[in-house]
Length: 113
Length: 109
Image (cartoon, rainbow over all chains, first blue to last red; front, side, top):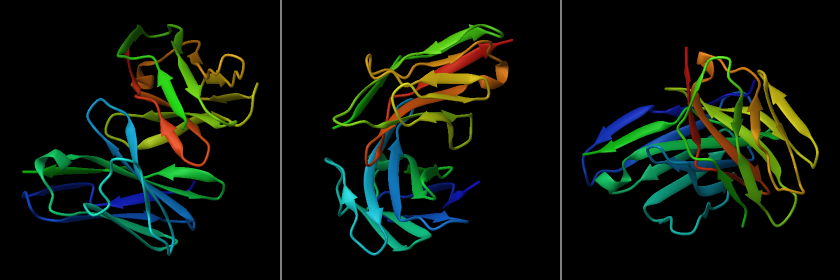
């Protein structure tokens, strides 16, 4: 089946630094990619939707200047958390739509000290 | 916009018990409905789906029927196993997938 990978799986960084998370669709072309955030014991909250070659569409309440999304190709999207703070610590999950379905990555655990 | 409401957990059952996890949705159109499962330490996996009213999705002994009249998509399994312990998310999709808050399921041997 279709596979979506994320890298890194875990990252710990200091407050004020920026962190980039990669999301790749491994065996299909993803016309649309999604980024979700999951807090402990809570649901996945959609942060933004991106289509290849165009600007991402952010959900209400998500700071686009803080969470930079680049959908550079049909198999790669990146999420950069800029000037990270402890409250940005969370589990970030990407998802890729292609082949008539939507597939989820394994997630990236971000811890900001 | 769309939204999904599912029963809060945790739900604790003994092995071979009958399982129901309730889910209701609101939508302006006719969304597709999904159940996703997240096993400990793993990513989200699609468990089953239904794309139109009265469709029944099924997989691994789990079933859910798309009920338009009650706007529901309850998840059921006749006999649960310890390996079913996970978090289950109900979701609907118009142009993007919206998830419920998740229900943690513990199955005791």
